[in-house]
Image 1 (cartoon, rainbow, N blue to C red):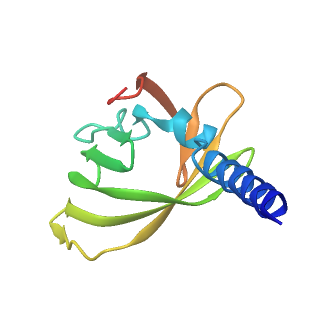
Image 2: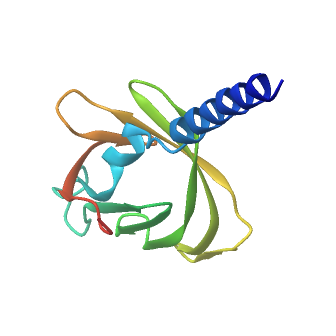
Length: 142
């Protein structure tokens, strides 16, 4: 009887360890986005008196920062993210604990939104609807 119970305990321990180890594996998409990504939209630069838009996203182990200037006014946001969905070509994040401003509007700490990131074959990413973000720095906290 003791042998039978101890073998069940060993099997249960192995199953628990397997579950713990698989839950600790990092999502390769989350690992890939770590760092600083930049995008420049030059569509208004040729018009006298207009500027281009520079957008930067920083992803660092569950936190994010987003800065943009100047076409629509300045944006400066910081907050946290968690993965909502991840597949071969895209990653959808939930952004929360957001603080900062977008143009003249302050963003409250209770704001929550989603952000879709699509991976392109050329190594760039599309964030939301803006394509062509290039990595300018690898992971921040590595």
